Amino acid sequence: MSRNAESTAFRSALEVIRGVEPRVAEAIGAELADQRESLKLIASENYASPATLLAMGNWLSDKYAEGTVGRRFYAGCQNVDTVEALAAEHARELFGAAHAYVQPHSGIDANLVAFWAILADRVEAPALKRAQARHVNDLTEQDWFALRRELGDQRMLGMSLDTGGHLTHGFRPNISGKMFDQRSYGTDPATGLIDYDRVAEAAREFRPLVLVAGYSAYPRKVNFRIMREIADSVGATFMVDMAHFAGLVAGKVFTGDFDPVPHAHIVTTTTHKSLRGPRGGLVLCGPELADQVDRGCPMVLGGPLPHVMAAKAVALAEARRPDFADYAGRIVDNAQALAEGLLRRGATLVTGGTDNHLVLIDVTGYGLTGRQAEQALLDSGIVTNRNAVPQDPNGAWYTSGIRIGTPALTTRGLGTAEMDTTAELIHTVLSQTGAGANPDGTASKAKYVLDPALADKIGRQASELLAGFPLYPSVDLG
Ligand code: PLP
Image (cartoon, rainbow, N blue to C red; front, side):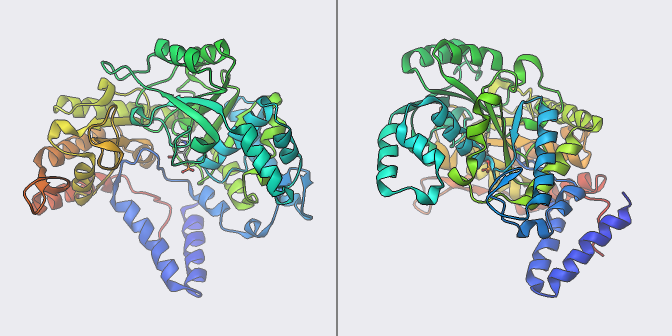
């Protein structure tokens, strides 16, 4: 693809938008400039390709397409059928799954689709069956009450939030915490690793309907073969949410026991994190759950987003190319180089390192909360996010950790040498930042003290580091 075509496409798009609402065009241009300048270490973000981005900006967006390929509730969906079928085919081939459902709008939505499919499959519930058979708008109030009674006490066992699990795995702030009676498994306090014997014990005691594996902030591989054995031993459906590490599965970095697809009954993911696609989700499963999964819309999803499914098809096609496997391998090399660089400089890491795309720094070693560390790094041009660490003394808001990930910088082309420099920048900021105090003299969990001259200096060094690795080099907005 010529650089010229990509520049022309984005420039023209902005020109057209500018003609209607110039402030939107300005914000889009500013976002590119900001992303180009920041050292992005947010573990859940990436940079989608120009082809993926461009596939989203078109008239496919105008179509309603409730239903599935060839069975729509709206007329004229032949082109939506084409893109949805392509996205599903690429997903099946890429991950070696029997069935793929590519309509979920996000990871949360993909999980909801999976939960409803599992409930419909496993629970003898006449009201649920009635609900599944009808359009959601046709359900009466009595139907909903009956449904609530029937589903009231189903159980889910998932990874605890402080050890890296996700809100959608049965926690109260999410609807999954209201749909299921949830219990969580944690990690071994000494090693920070999942203790499979403890998971098995919890499963035996709690006897969940669903065992969930997958995480947002666990820096290690998970053995899905063992997790499946645990699920089977108590008759649970085994679900894996691979939102964070789908790119490592796609790129064949996680194989055998560490590839969830052959071991789980159902797998969900986002498409925009390490997988490097558009914002969205998808569900993979075997034939047993396929029918229920395909009822995701309208059961729990709004109408499909055909333009995003087109972009999923493009991104999944990219992920099937050999260079994606190379990319996935470099994500992990970079995370390990970053971890080693931090450890060498004295940082404390949860589990002592990483074997995936993310590193979790316990910043209490620097005398800081996660909130203080996150802000001090941001002042210095380094974008990360705060995260709880196991048994976090500072709770889920202030936290004691900083989660950093390498998918985005790896897309940009940075390698292990640059990761060492990045470790140096992070360590310098954290070791030079002091905890602040409240006006009454008590310790603050949010305020911090960082010399602005140092923050500027680190910011300049971060920019210099990035200058050698231009972001979207094919796109010149003029
Ligand atoms: N599942 C996991 C493991 C995640 O980390 C996330 C997002 O951070 C989600 C689901 C939700 O994804 P989304 O924000 O696309 O709804």
